[in-house]
Image (tube, rainbow, N blue to C red):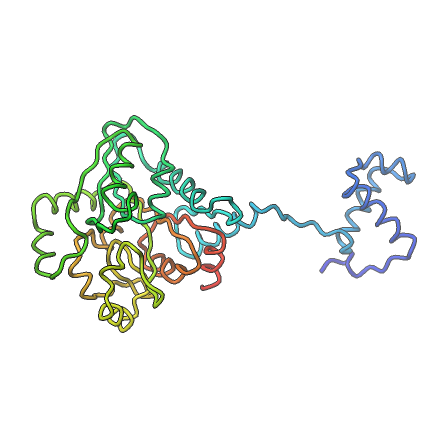
Length: 320
């Protein structure tokens, strides 16, 4: 605490400090005008203003909403060793659209006309694809990270998103016209070795940039894209093995380590560990119900960038 904070001023001096402070900070008067009003020099007015701040009469606070968002971004950058973070205010009229715009900006900043972009599926990924600007990158390529869910939910499944993203960028796209999950492990393994499937997933593993969503695992349910495969036995297995997140069709525990459940072995997709070999991975996910899942993915080191909302960001910071 400064020496001025302990100084006891007489009533007359306090009134002077209050008047000068009010004129300068509330009325936006110039120091020279205040000096003329009170009969002192401008230097004396400046000294009086410094005394007012030191004594706690004046407290300056930066309170613009952007300051809080920037603070959350910096905390997430430092805590999880990320390269980029964008935090969107939930006061936005359409949070999903705002997050999609932010994610599209970050993704495009790390692409070029010859980039290979690997993408997963889901609503947040779809919101990002919808906000991609038009380009004429004829040598670009969009490739799926996983098979299709056939969920009956148009525009958030992998084939639709790859096609839409390539149309926005003006380039080409690959398809992976096989189910995400097979009835048996043997069938999934056989399909993964099929030449066209193997080539597609190999290209995804060698992408320049990736865009992925993050799914939560809870007793309340799972992503609608996976719901038809999450039977009661699978739910019990996920609970027994402490799975909290799903990423690229696989499951992770709170420490970000892969959880080997039977459903994973029936899935055709790029293994999450392969994401670490992609130069820049953008994760887009939000919602307080996903905090544990997002934290697991961050702790596991799968992402280079995170785009989320302010409530989710604040919860992630508080969890540490």
